[in-house]
Image (tube, rainbow, N blue to C red; front, top):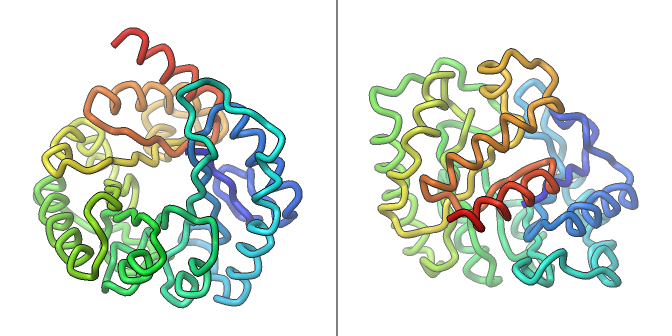
Length: 269
């Protein structure tokens, strides 16, 4: 999953409010082997003010107008690449989702809200989109730096049991649910390392697991690397370990490096 930020405050410094530039970035990621493109209009950073619903929709719609041309005259990198590529929308406010999904090419809602209610699940069910459920607590765009877990994996499994049941009750088929352990969301340094180590426990749900692993702060802390753009080797190492533990989708900035790693690991499996 390649990352396209239609904003100017991405933590890794690769966002752009220019729709043409964002489209070119998506195209480059697809040519590098991305199966999915995750486009977001608002940074998840908690030290930035939330943008308005109107502004978020304006950014999404500007990108969506360009989307059909992004891959119109290109080809998949290999025979295993999803084609056409899947478009994912990284957003969580129901007011945005309700206006964004109808009639759009979006196939996956990447929701970081931890599903406080079933409104986004209902929207996905109505419009045929899949839904990503991310583990966290509290409101998005608010730092939860002091959250403590007695057993982060046990709590995560209970959380997913509850949210999956709610999502299915809202009418969304289980085949359209993706799980995300929420690395660095309401988690401390050691919590994140435990999640990486014990990720295999999520296989019990029998659902795809997406790992948003790319250039994470915890990687920088382990390696002593402050610049997120210098963390790609650490990212690939986490991907390799997570593949052994059952993760199927990796959200990354450097698609080419990730594609090469996955290709080789598949050959050696």
